[in-house]
Each structure stands twice: as structure tokens, then as C-alpha cells.
Length: 113
Length: 115
Image 1 (spheres, each protein chain N blue to C red):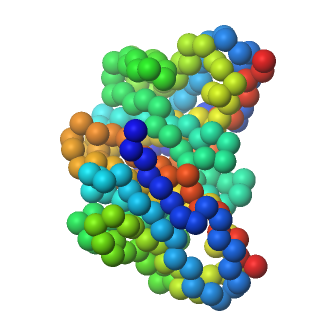
Image 2 (cartoon, rainbow over the protein chains, first blue to last red; image 1 turned 90 degrees about the horizontal axis):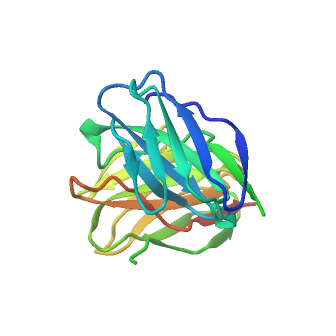
């Protein structure tokens, strides 16, 4: 599985946007970029995924660099409930479903009120 | 919204005992997974299961571990003879079998404490 690199932790103020970076310089052409998050004492939760184009959903936006070697998860207005560990994960499109998730250490996001 | 459920939420057992962790995946899902997370560490894949057989397993998933789908709703993880190092949160996940689905839906986890 291709490796991802994320900062260990980030801090944000409530109601402000948060940009969570992820580097994946060895990404292959068939790798999707997935983001999951894990709230305290809960199981991981899907946030968003993309291949080449930027993506938006009700939870977040995903901005993907043109060369696909990096991506950024954008929370438009952080709330206290967004405090969690955020994981950037690459998954091969060829085995898109039925394929395991390989979690790294992720980024711990702290949100200040 | 449908969700994955797991029971029990917390299981305490003595070293060497057998434990069975139970999961009820979302009803129309066909792929099932177990992951574990030792306190303070990464979430680790254990096993995936499809069409009543294991499709992939990790090095952690040795002969002490087994999975079963005994009926149309439950998905279980059995550890035959628990060790202290099996203490962890165990998460079940499921995925629907359709091309448009990319999400794995995780349960709340079972905390296993081996004493």
C-alpha cells in the first residue's frame, strides 16, 4: 500500500476553516484518496474520497493537487464535535470494495472554543 | 440511519480463556471486516470476509483467531486462548457490494481487557 504522510497534530479555533494536509508522493494512477476520522472513543468514520477532481460533500471538501502527490481535507467551519483523529488513506481502485483500509497515525485535530 | 452494532461494549476475560465478539453488520452489506486498536496505537486490519469465507487476513490473524457468520445477521470474531497482548478495542466494519460504494461502516467497538 502506498504511504501517506500527515502532521501529528493541528489546532483550530471554533467556527474557522481547517485545512488538513496529506502527502502521498508515491501514489499510483489507480489509487483513490480516502479520508476517515475517529472521534474520541468511537470507531472510524468515512469522511470523503476522490481520485483526481476536487470533491465536496456535507461533511467536508477534498482538494487534490494536480500531480496527485498531495491532498487537503477542508473543514469549512470547525466545531468542537470535529475534534478527532483524521486519517488519509490510499486505496487501489482495482480492488475498490472488499479491500482493507490501512490506517496510519493520522492527524489529531484539536478545536478550541 | 442504519448502523453496525457490536456486543458487548466491554469484555473482561482471564488469560487463556476463549472470547467471542459479536457484530451485526448493516443488513444489505456483504463484505465484513474486523480491525483492532491497541490503546494509543494505530487501527490495524485483522480480516475481511465475503461470501462465507475469508478474503484476506493479516499476520495478526493467526490460528488463535477465527471468524464466522453463523446466521444471516451476526458476524463473530473468536479468540481461542486470549493473551495479555490481545487487550484492545475491536472494531467490526461492513461494506455494501455495489460499485458506487467506497465507505466502510464501522461499529462502536468492543473493548477487550485480558487480565
